[in-house]
Amino acid sequence: MGEKLSSFNPVDFLQGEEEIAEYLTEAYLDEDPNVFIIALGHVAKHKGISTLAKETGLNRESLYKTFSGKVQPKWDTVHRLLRALNVRLALSG
Image 1 (cartoon, helix red, strand yellow):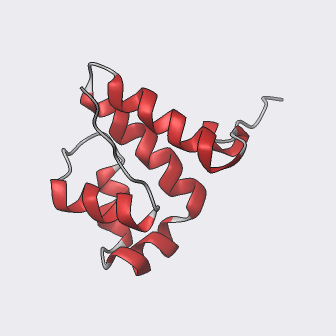
Image 2: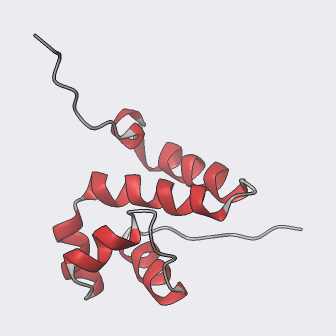
């Protein structure tokens, strides 16, 4: 009989906010901007899509679409998610 596979979320194995911030930073620095959206989705799913929907005023379906990889999210959506997740982006030169 075949094994049942469950979904994998790397954020479940990170230890605290500092490691989550480092994870998002590394994803942001990747040349492919989709890597950051995927990482943001991992963090969002770790917190809970329903919770984020309430905190951002976005509906759950649009959040799932955002992280599906099939659409390119608007900056407003990303910004709301970052604020709800308490993520602060810092730029350095």
